[in-house]
Image (cartoon, rainbow, N blue to C red):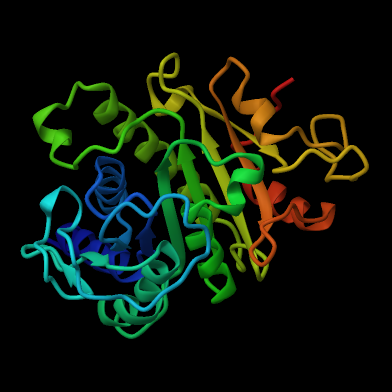
Length: 302
């Protein structure tokens, strides 16, 4: 009986101390990828609330607007025309849409939903994505996925943008109706990979990330990488700059670009550290902080 009581107490403490995560994206609240990520984070024990655009808002960068009543249905007809500017799933209030841009969805999650679902406290972390399609190099400037992660960092909440090569703009219902489809399998693999990444980062000492800094994480195709365990993370930079001196790792002070690493064979995922204001690469000292936090999962691509 004492053992059972201790187990029950441990479970209660674990639930109370679970990291609080706002999950957002730019592809919309009902795509397979974001729902798979929500399920994976929840199953892993995280305290999650989803706040995403009502429709696909890919490529909108850091655009912002006041949410408005829907003039068309939510994506995949998940809410009707005339629905309010913000709303939730009828059976799961933790699944929320915002009829505006990704930045607005992230802001709504942080400022409105987090206090409601996290007992008045702020989220510990914001996960943006995984996006359908990679966000590499200059694409980060127009990426709504990166825009949402940047918004979080600027509000003082550590964050990361995740993007993935395989997958399509398909409904979350395909996860159960077509579980062996390429899109469904990719969504499950990438979601598990994101959880493993978050596990390591959030286990590091506070602060999780330097102020005003976010991470841009990109996953290669699942064609040859058929399980989360097949992937290896590499520290990279967003933009090529032969004159820059990066943190010393893998025998050099010049980090490879994320584009060059994603193009390689070998299931290499990239991690770039960027300034949330400019969406540009940071200096070596800041890169070094992230390198130390993720050292256990980082490898060299050469």
